[in-house]
Length: 510
Ligand code: F6P
Image 1 (spheres, rainbow, N blue to C red):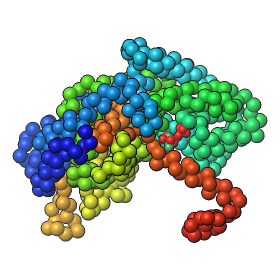
Image 2 (spheres, helix red, strand yellow):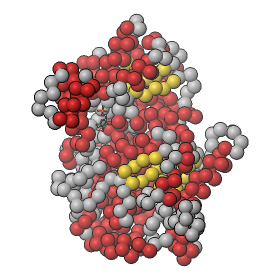
Image 3 (cartoon, rainbow, N blue to C red):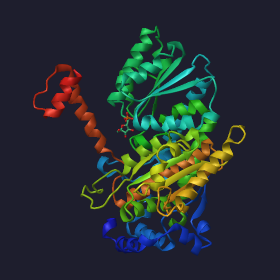
Image 4 (cartoon, rainbow, N blue to C red):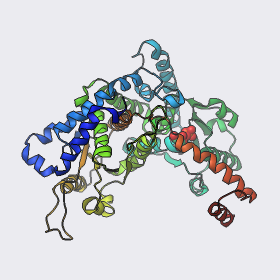
């Protein structure tokens, strides 16, 4: 049933009105067990949800909403491999990429065997590259999911990465990016990975062609050794002239593809064992999502909280603040995950929705954000739920830094909630501002895998409750078509039939 037709939705609307007077400080004062009741451990991730605008009654209603919208059935359909991506008639099985070999029977046994066959080949290749001292630079050319995931993970796991190899990520069709990277490279020491699910994306293909031209112009000839393709479109990669190809399947969405061959840069950086740990951490979170009762299921609780905030308390954005510099690309990664998945205005049947969906997601690593936009979070006119991500143990031994970092993240969450009284003047902080606190013991391949899988599943949960298809992205396709037309007009100068603004800009850039 559509969420806005359920009894729980109406009860939540009524509950939201009563909630206007909710104050976190009072909630903690009234309930000594609040921190414990709203905290939980999952594989690799501890979560404290207690500083959120939520109480037990609201969580119970949100759980009813989950029941009445068939969340568990939708989740189980995904894990059975049903075609829940209805507009593209595809299964949604990124989770299968981290499923242990031989662990499934029935119709999923064969795809799982293929997953492991490809994984083994890719990891074998990754080890070969790692052992190849001639290759000092790995350049990943891809965009969107074919860039953000591997880039985020290579950065996050830099402490586990092989020294002696540099990793570069080129995504933008803006030639300044590729030119800047190529400047520092030598053809005989470079491996280009052309990462594209479709192998048709114009940015990636343009960069790939330029990289190939550069390689040949530098005297490079062994394309098989210096170029590899990561794609579902093996034929297009072959037509491009690349014979070293690692495939994946149409049931892996671009923004969910880190675990597939798209993860090759990560595997080269951290090795086969490290990549397997990443998959294992994500799999542990898959199991938590699949088997834990909904009331104790962290992705479910987070996803339902997202719905509560978006549709009932009308908070329109969420800010991510990873307090670990290695996690600095996590906000960008989560932006695509949330907004490309749930930025939809029709339900799974194509019917227009009457309620909001994806929040705006944004953020920067702490403590940098504190000296930039935290002003607005503390004293601005809008309430922005925060999501802090912290790591207990550092991997460096510099004195004082980590304690200071952790002090800052805890203090920010505290200050947002507690506020500061200044009789309403400039130095007054209203407080009562909500935040979620996610804590990893250590940042490792396994804990990163669990953290990312947690985020994937929470996006699934809110999308399922909203009744939308979180696995297509028709909104991005239009841009691909429009740019083709304008590109031809920039080359020809033909501005006929265009609106005056577009024609004016076209003439100016020529
Ligand atoms: O931007 C749309 C999109 O399809 C993303 O979903 C995807 O991650 C990106 O383009 C790149 O696509 P591809 O991997 O096919 O080049």
